[in-house]
Image 1 (cartoon, rainbow, N blue to C red):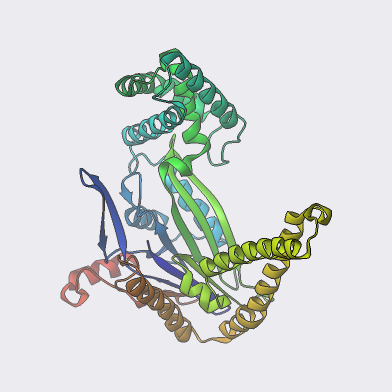
Image 2 (cartoon, rainbow, N blue to C red):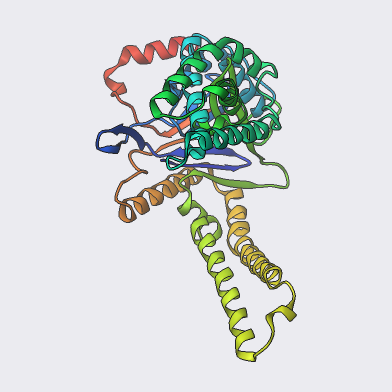
Length: 422
């Protein structure tokens, strides 16, 4: 896990992130997790222009670290610029699409087959009943596959994928997938020989229609100034790797500072301390509160009806009334949180100097790290905190940045960097 903050006002963007990363491995002893505190999550997206990027969740894409992908893009981008931040993001995903140097087709094939096989066999496993006869299992599995296939074929492909992608992949990988599904189901004793072609199609449809469920996800935050921007913009995307030589990504949120919106604060991944700072409570506390309200309202209603000797049926739809009451409570809580916490904070952020914004962003990450340290058995947020500031004219400037080497001992490195920027 991680904790990251993007803070903006009309002067600048501040990006801050911890350095913790979690590596999960499976062994004979089960799931094992290791924690390291040296990951880079904040990056300069352009050597010449005021744009940066942050990553969270998965640290790689098709076994390639995002750090390599972003820095390779930065080199290719050179001095090229765009009018908006979102155009930088689109150029980044165009760089990934069709890039067989970073993502060889052999690796794409291997990962796609593994994902399709897993997706198809999951449907079979859920339908299979070891206590039933083979004939009954055949029928149950066939019905489950047919039903799921119908659901998938009714879904639309993401716009970033080619419409003929599933058909092309079926022709290219169908035989291999047929073989591996036959072998795996045979070892497990699942009767699927008669529907193996449908199972192949199911696996391919699954990875194309629900890539986020089968390839993992990475959050990508692009922030800064386009050529036509006076004030900063933040754009958040969710990436699910590469399928059929196409980057799989979807825009989640866009926030722009303008003459009416003076400031914005957004947190990513672990956000409880930032939420508490912004609203007065975290999302988990709010969820627990609303669950408690719902349960209390239902119990109180039953108690009132019982004590009055009344007939609950005469009250009409009690559940609907409780839903209305719960929504009113929710609206009131959120309204007070906005008026008493979020809006005053936004007004202050709107006039906060750049150096104090950077200090505040670092403090929020530090608080999240401290909370994880004292409340959880494993520290998933921690390590050095990287803080970068992006302004329209100074570009990306590091306020705090870790290095795996001492720059003072590497004068030639400094000279190489200076030469690249000439």
